[in-house]
Structure formats: structure tokens, C-alpha cells
Image 1 (cartoon, rainbow, N blue to C red):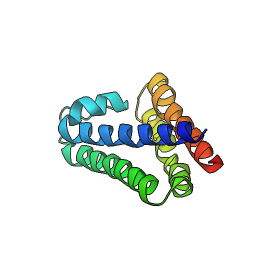
Image 2: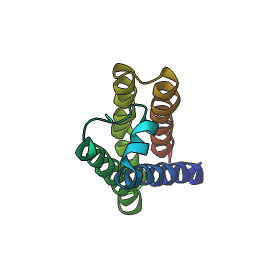
Image 3: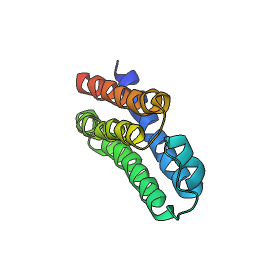
Image 4: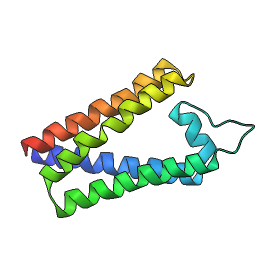
Length: 123
């Protein structure tokens, strides 16, 4: 179970780091994938960059916690960070995104992050 717990945590940390980088490098396409496209008539680049930096920082922090503080610290981090995709679910639903994206991407991500936290607590 230790290998599974660590592997899932590393994959999730790397995945959110990738998402952050994508929001910095391809902001409009990333916004569409998020479920709420950026306003084509406005300049949302600052907000998209903020999302990219937030997600990238979560990935780096998660990897650092796992490497330097251990599974228990990472488990608490995952437990807390699971709030982000839960709120992302609400944001997508409240701003005209589809239920498929809200639940299939964001809510499902929250569930996987919570599973990761539970596995890390068991290590």
C-alpha cells in the first residue's frame, strides 16, 4: 500500500504542476478545459496566470512535503487541497459550465485527492 500511496500522491502533484504550467503557457485553451472559457471580448490573462501559479505552487508544495516531511504531512496537505477542486466544481456550475465537466473533472479530482490523503494516512 505504501507504493500505491506514494505513487498516487506523486502523480497528483505532477499533474497539478502540469496544469499550472499549461495555464501559464496556453491560458485560453486551459480555461476551456477547466469548463469556463475566458471571455473572448475581455482580457482575463491576469486571472488565468494566477490560476496557473496557484496550481503550479500546489504541485511544488506537494512534492516538497512528500520528499522532505513525509507521508503524514502530504496527507494533511491533500486533505486541505481537496477543497480546491470541490470549489472548482461549484464555480463551473455557477458560471455556465457543463455538469459533465464539473462532476467528471473537478468533483472526480476531489474524490481522487481525498483517496490519496486516506492512503497516505494509512502509511
